[in-house]
Image (cartoon, rainbow, N blue to C red; front, side, top):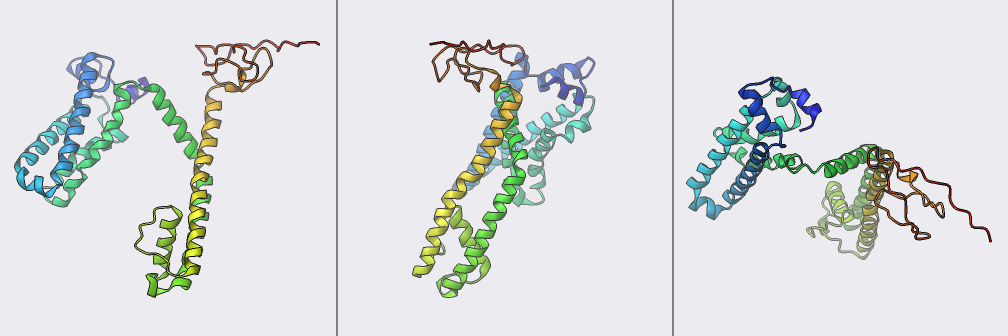
Length: 301
């Protein structure tokens, strides 16, 4: 776990709490990695058990076995949650963190199901705990990519909101038009039902429970299907453009240029110039900045 997160939770000064802290929160040691891998395996098995228990035939045949296994995992995750609380100096800070809330929700449904049996299905929320796999295998490069994507989504939220508003207005207008053209006799009983059909058509889902029967209605439906194909590319382009900007902000990609022809804009993965085929200077390994680029050679006729 990162040093900042360790400081936030409060690392114990010594004793058994420090040893427990190293096993639970630090994956640099063999014991810590083994602990995390066992927890991830338990999460996967417990989710699989809940899914199998939802099959009526299996539930009727192995009801007691499923219940016993589920209580075993619930006790295991409860002990783990309590151990995470007692092994830090600021347990409330961990309890209010994202993983703390997820860990608590992962064990609550089983206990609450004693009073409200329908809540038993919420046990599948344990799958969210698999987010710890990024820390277990130390995939820092993927975590950085997720941060870039998150920043791009936050920066694009206004554009995406405007785009969704435009799509909603198109669905409302065309859905109302289909309600007028088709009418209740063809399944369009009211405007909300027609708007529901318009949304499923624009998103290319098309459940097929409602279909236009008139020629004009089919023409409008065809236009909506084409609009749906076009709308798929809009949010993708918005987010991709923002991600490109974020990547350039994190690393000065445009600082690398070809020393022969002067073409710039090469990323750290580029090895040769696309224009002249010359070798590119390697980026600096320490700061991420590119090495100084000499002025391009001038070839006189």
